[in-house]
Length: 147
Length: 166
Image (cartoon, rainbow over all chains, first blue to last red; front, side, top):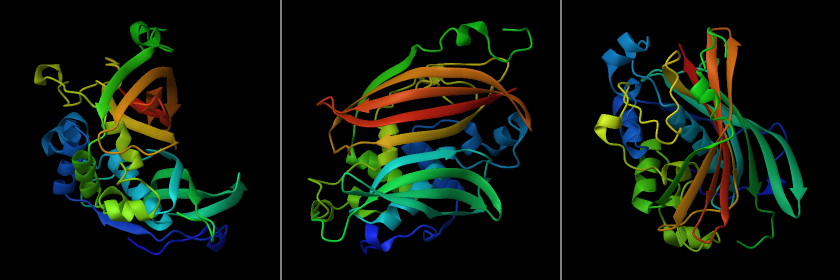
């Protein structure tokens, strides 16, 4: 991640977030299921995913897509930025091994009680297909603020 | 409920009730394993010195991990055939719509959790509705969840949903 701190004053509507590109594999899905105590077979049992639930392969956990999209945001806001609101919808599934792109753009900025809030439109995509649309609000430090 | 409805009367009657309460502890090894599985090596989750330099008293729990800090234990014989446990969803099951997937989540984060913080969760069933989408009829369940720490401070408020399909 970028360790350079971004400040409220630096950000303008329309600015893009640096995109995060991830191609998952079975190991990542397994470790994520383990870390979230998720026993759902569609994330590790290919036969079950195909025959019982009709998918072509094991599928990426919705919460992993959400976590990757949040990572794109928290990487961008730096150590002094704070995730305030985070909202995503699972619109489409992703299969293991597909290249996924997580990113977004700034839709607005506002000062509320001297806190610099930035509104974002965010999405997880596979090529042009939006898998996970969402919005987020982050607080960024103002230049001159002390940590 | 009509005979065609995917929502059984028993599930419908639970709207507005508490689906689940749970208590857990934010644990840095657990959240770091989660972060590693996400490939998220943000030093706020790992490096106390870095976190202190940003104004925190120690490393903090990644906001999206909070929901897992309260997960309990499910006996194998209570796990559904599809491997899901149903514990945090309040064991809502829709026999006529057995295929389940997460719908979405919307969370407001108020303050961070630290290592060893005790986390209390209260989850209520906000709504259960039948929807007709392009891919057919499905059930949309929405929960509202509040997380507090041992000082009863509000950490996060979340609205989450699940989709159940025939």
